Amino acid sequence: MNYTCSPDDDCSVMLGSIGVRDVDDLFADIPDALRLREKLDLPSALSEIEIMRLIEDLAAKNRPGRCFAGAGAYVHYMPAVVDALASRSEFYTAYTPYQAEVSQGTLTAIFEFQTFVCKLTGMDVANASMYDGATALAEAVLMSAHVSGKKSVLAGDALHPHYRAVLETYCRANGLELRILPSAEGVMDTSALAGALDTATAAVVTQNPNFFGCLEDVAVISGAAHAAKAHSIMVVTEPHSLGLLAAPGKLGVDILCGEAQSFGNPVGYGGPALGILAAKGEFMRRMPGRLVGKTVDADGKEAYALTLQTREQHIRREKATSNICTNQGLCALRAVIYLSALGNAIRPLAELNHRLAARCKTLLASKGFLPIFDRPYFNEFAVRIKKAPVVMKRLEEEGFVPGVHLGDYYGEYADCILVCCTEMTSPAEIDAFAEAVARCSR
Image (cartoon, rainbow, N blue to C red; front, side):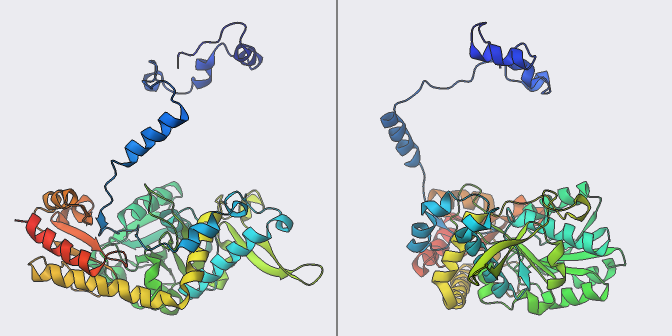
């Protein structure tokens, strides 16, 4: 650190008061080899005008591409009303709603978010306290283990690799065994599932649509889990699929978790994310985070309150489910505004996403770039392209975000790309993309 106070500095007096010689003593726990000894190479301070010009120059280096990437983060149209309402100061400055009497607006928005999630998923109860899809999955698995008292979890290898990595960390830290099941033709191998299920299995985790874009037979997987007295946990990373596919609650799913970013939240450099967690009614008192409920006040008027809070700060430690508490209120509010504006149009929007993906898949196939799985899908599919990394680089130079390289996660798919289409990829852009793939592959 190499910061030294002079004897007359206020900081010297403060350091003396807490019994240390200098600022370096405050960082004594950090190994010496990891500590920075030289000064940071930072430019001198700039005026506000200079800062604005610098930011504009940096922003000009961005090359917004025509995006065909998904894999857990999706580009959808953002109605103007989302930014207009979510930017109101009473929303974006609101803190966690401990005091119901001064938090009715925030609590109402959270309650509506929970309601939307339940309606879309067919589940009985939902919370609004998950950071992102991956940690929502981890919390779902921990909840299943706590309820069942079992220590083994099964998950398919078509589960998003990032989610799987987070789940592995949580399971290892909580003494749970995580077993990864192989895929067959792009979906969970149900024969392998049947052979792996036993009396120690707490839950079976499946993603639908899965990381390859394929649709899993969730009802069959749930039935197999229940036959072994295990829970069925379903992960969703593209919630627009819920506008078209059968509700998970109707497919035997016990716990639904995942990501709701594509509902009203933009895709940034890693965020913001919006985790969702919903479950059957019997799990309600074991759910992490907070549940907002609707009631009436002393005058009989509609009111909202934090009905359940299950972390150690609020209840006895042995009854606590998780220390998670952040309600992701602003991101949830954006989802509520988005879904309110969209209304019943979520189904035709989901159908449009699928039609555009089908157009892209057909065009690529006509040019010799065949899908690697012949399975039903929603708006993503995996396609084989020889020397995929080289082709992707060329496509980027032509102004495309060409998809996600599957070889980064699965060695056997080194020449494969995961391609996604939404309403933001027009038919003309899809046609141009297919032509560009053919051209860049020569």
